[in-house]
Image (tube, rainbow over all chains, first blue to last red; front, side):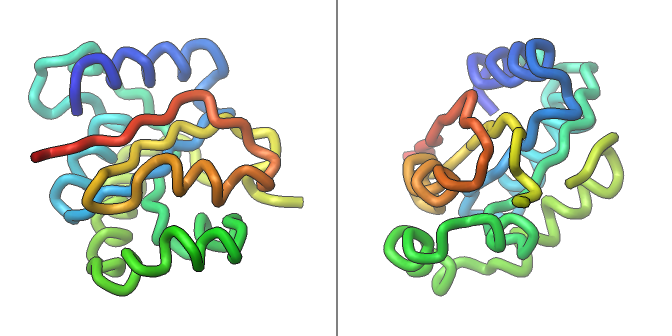
Length: 109
Length: 43
C-alpha cells in the first residue's frame, strides 16, 4: 500500500477511533487483498510506510463479503459491481481478507 | 438499522477490481460516512 494512503488511514483511525472505522477493499487479487488487510490490522508487512509496526486492528472487509454486500444499494450494485463479481474469484478474495481480520482485527462489525 | 450506520468508511478500491467510486455509490444510503476513498492502479 502506498505511503500516502497508509498515512491517511492512520490519521482517520486516530481522528475517529478504530472502533468507528470500517475499511472496505475492492482489490482484484487475493494476495493483494490480504496484504492490504494485513496493513490496516497488523501493520505494514514491508516496513516501508507509516504503518510499519503499527497494529491498528481495524475491521477490514472485502466488498464481496456477504456482511458488506448486504449493506449495499442493490440497484447500484447491479449496475456497477455485479459484472466484476462474476469475473473475480470472490470466495478467495473474501477468504484472504477474512483470514487477516480473524487474526489481527481488534473489532468486527 | 444498517450495520454500517454511524461508521466512518475507508474505501480502498482497485481499477481492475472494484473502484472506489462504485463502492461510494453503493454505500451512500447505508448511514455511513466515507472519510477516505482511493482507487489503486497497478498498471
